[in-house]
Image 1 (cartoon, one colour):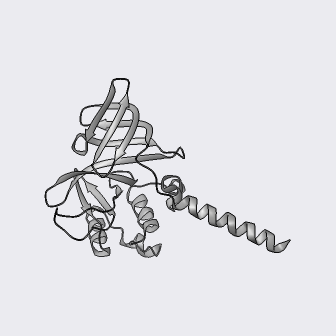
Image 2: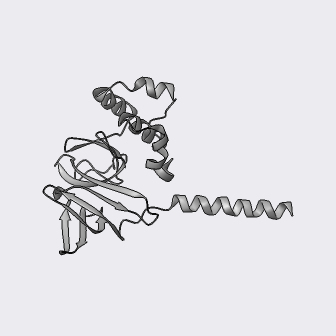
Length: 195
């Protein structure tokens, strides 16, 4: 009986791990709202990160928006969790891109894979960014992250006290929650399965 119990426990852990590892599918339509430069519109959102566009189906019909027209989009994913997409200008050509806000706030932690600084660049930038006003900055190295955080406040002590490894996603989430004044009890609700 004991080997069978261990077998089912292992299967449960494996299935749970696979469920957590699934990528959120942005190609589907989700209920939410879009905040443009001039309006707030409710409807079903379909986000295309590759083309930096968002399609909104509302009572007025179907409308496509480019990243430069979007401030943010908030929607409920397939698990019913609130997700936020923000736009910002980045790169040598200061093109508008869409980013997933892992931690929203006055100093957001943004996530986007596969961005290059210039069109003909061979290297992808690390996936974490932040936004100041309307410009987005890469958080590619530990030094860059610490320099940025020292500009917005003194967070070195927090990093040392909690022994954060700020190149790891979970620790970056905790750090940016702290920077944005989010209560530690709320952190797990905001980060969800990411912690």
